[in-house]
Image 1 (cartoon, rainbow, N blue to C red):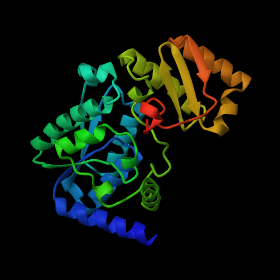
Image 2 (tube, rainbow, N blue to C red; image 1 turned 60 degrees about the vertical axis):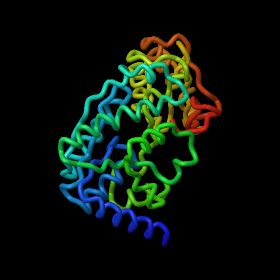
Image 3 (tube, rainbow, N blue to C red; image 1 turned 90 degrees about the horizontal axis):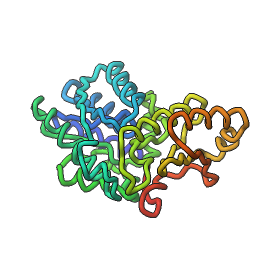
Image 4 (cartoon, helix red, strand yellow; image 1 turned 180 degrees about the horizontal axis):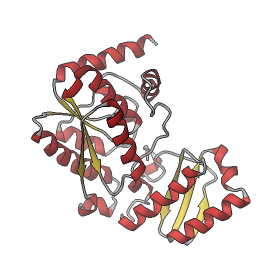
Length: 272
């Protein structure tokens, strides 16, 4: 607990020193804590910058907007078409690099119009152990990573989020929809929408931490062990099969190994 308090104080001290900042805000666990603390210590000098992309589901955008409205935080939404970036669409192993570079470039322009020179993003201390090509784009752009610099881990971020009453403290990890598509398989808007609706179907039925992975016309569902039996129940399975096939999937499978972060990445080494 002593380390947590020290890290939290280090975060606040660093944020005060930045003066006026734009926080790259996705509505996830990490960026929500970062934005909350930045706004607590900097007030109106902390602005939320959200990238509206085709690979971001609608519920994430709504949650981000609702949080800023509830907290009284200025929220700038930048509409970005990542499908216009050929390197992203090809879906190579370093796809996240091209996406992050595109996002930072766009929100950076919006920040510059507001006179903001510091862009903050939510990498945490645990992320360095993952395969994260987007980290290269962050370093090239010169965005700042206060959570990482303060040494805050994911568990500590959730603890602080609960203490501060943030709705994201127990929010499941949720990477972008493009992370569900097998590497090398082109990313299309149709596939992204299929994934969004398919995962929405599962979430609406109480399956919180899961992924619908796409391999051509096959949907591979990853879920926590306690959810696998529920999904396999006759009524659930029948409704799911009907829904997924209506979306355009020809085959539907349930991965018996369960939910795994980064199973689409090289050697299954990263979050996603």
